[in-house]
Length: 430
Image 1 (cartoon, rainbow, N blue to C red):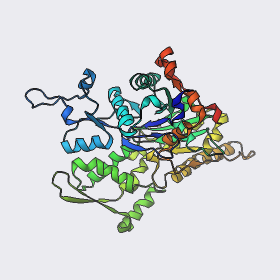
Image 2 (cartoon, one colour; image 1 turned 135 degrees about the horizontal axis):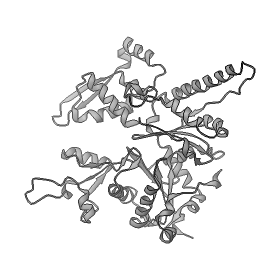
Image 3 (cartoon, rainbow, N blue to C red; image 1 turned 120 degrees about the horizontal axis):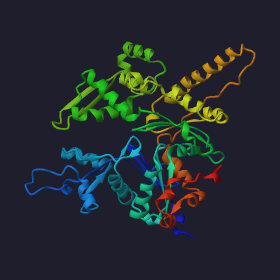
Image 4 (cartoon, rainbow, N blue to C red; image 1 turned 90 degrees about the vertical axis):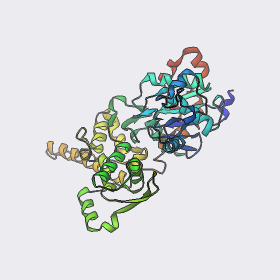
């Protein structure tokens, strides 16, 4: 028996904005850190004149001269970059896909040794991937995990499948449904039937948490709020997370704000980082206009105009006909950008309108002789919605089936990285 199977597996959910990491069996991740890497000032190469710094710190890593402690990740990286006044930050993941594998390897190294403080040779690993990830990307992940960290076993799970598994209870694990996964860098609508992703029906929307942050920043700037330029993006992100909500009717919401500004307009206060002088700004329409991008994307950009409810409907209608009713009944929300107050109610209402209108149109075409059975629409919101992918990974990695589904070090040495191109679904669970 492999001794590593007696220890809890390590679960790491790498997102564009944040990475969640911890051990299988826990309710919440142990650490949530921004997915960013930076080199410490002491490690940045300086020429003999001492006047110019190297623009690419990864040159040293590739040359094998960078020590393990010469770089930082997460909040520590952001604070170091802010205090030093330099911008040598590297974001390894862009729009859900790994963009810089060298930085990603360094990021995983810090996650394992500095945060989780575990020996990777003693634990099986569950990592997550976007539904649109290429098979070659899984091979790179497998090479790093088996070659660099020498892990005994690895499972690369598709994020929407884990989000469905997050609804697991002792009596039920519903693995058929549509996952609306809205993170910081990408929003995907993914239909899953019996644990298998219906790849041809996946839809994506080029609007996510990062776009809402930029939109809030734009609204504050256009209104002339006195926010320091170097602080504007961080203030916009905080405003989004603390004050934004989803309204049921945008016109009524404008009228409410105009009639009772004292009730709805909030104040943001801060200090300028360079001078320490205090500043304040009003938070008004952006409170509901930010999340409105999902339902009226044309207010942000003319490049994309399909609302999220319409996209979900198109996704389900393109799925096999025998799965559609089950998919409408189990629309699962996942990711931090679905956490706005009232988001799930607005989404369910708008999606229900689309489905009912289609039903009425069908009855009208048939002359009213036949009554179609109403289609139940159910959008699920749950307590672990923000960390649904990580929690689903924690649940699945806690089962005995997990260890039999993993690719092992022995298999990797025998067959190579190609084994990571596919991962079996846990058929024993449902």
